[in-house]
Image 1: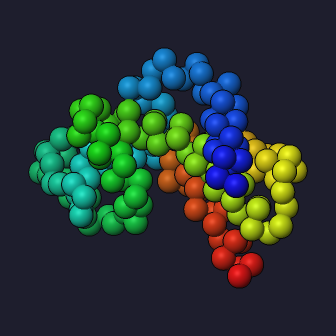
Image 2: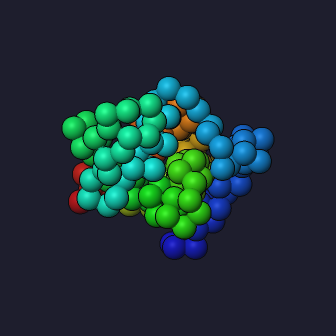
Length: 160
């Protein structure tokens, strides 16, 4: 079962690269505006348990994001870890989007297997769910809405 989930994740990753390939040349630059800019700021200011206070980003008297709570701790922590290694907040958020496709594909396959479906049908359904337009459109515009990697786990908890 694990190798089928891994194959599904790899296939989802490969298929997502067809759409994301032009953007991958600029993976260290901002991919979106609007709400995506706040995601890049969150990745830059997250320190593991809260946000650092800063006078950057056009706030001369200081900006305290702790006053505007973010519940996306997993995504902020991943982006902050990548930011600490490469000193680039854009890379962490953009990499999070790219890696969300294989993660959603693999988890969806496991969830579908728990319902009793097997083989090519389960792989096809998992890939179809991964490639819905919502994942692309919301992922580039609003990473926290587009990163729905825990969604496939919800129906599987209802089956037990």
